[in-house]
Amino acid sequence: MLTEPAIDNDSTTPAISDNFWVVGLGFTEIVDEALRLPKEKQLELARTLLEKNEASGDLMVESEWEETIERRIHQIDSGLAKGRPFSDVLRDIDKRLAR
Image 1 (cartoon, helix red, strand yellow):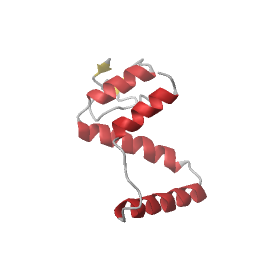
Image 2: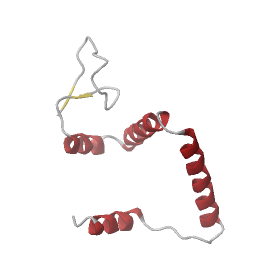
Image 3: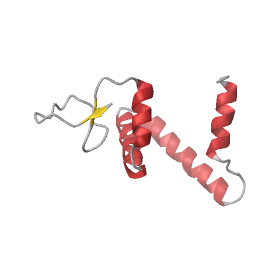
């Protein structure tokens, strides 16, 4: 359940948006709440999580990922590779994990 922030604005409470804080939720509930956010806020949350994760990352690995991403973009743009709908990818992952 999302609640309005207290006036003392405890900075140790994880913020999920500019106006609300997560209180006592498990992972699934946090995901459910995040999916209820407007798309713009969902993207902001995803970007924040990725940036925080990358901030502690290895610079060599980061460089290699950048090269891989650039190579894959070039392959798609030149017609050497073909993308798949994300829903198909998720379905295949679920099948592999037997969900």
